[in-house]
Length: 100
Image (cartoon, rainbow, N blue to C red; front, top):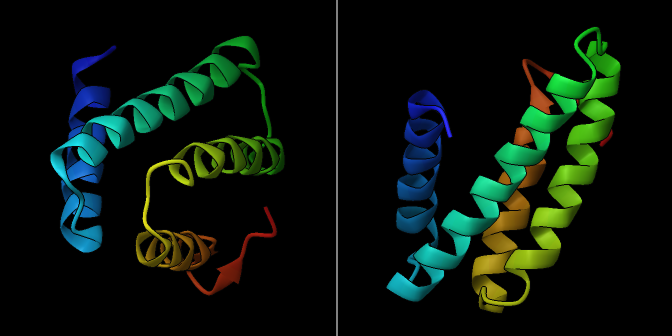
């Protein structure tokens, strides 16, 4: 994994850990989920160098769904509700709603 990618994951992990009040075990599990999601996105970009923005958004939806399937296994209901709210917020970018 590239150093800049590892840094992005660490930053995301710290933010989620604070926002969701994650235990150490949950932090480790979430780190794995974030790393796997990043790897999937990198693979998509590598295999499709001319991918359009719309296709990236569509594929991101699939990656996001997979990540949620994983976090559901170790988040509490309260943590999951906050996670879902954060994902919904992330789908709105500069006033535009992403439908994936």
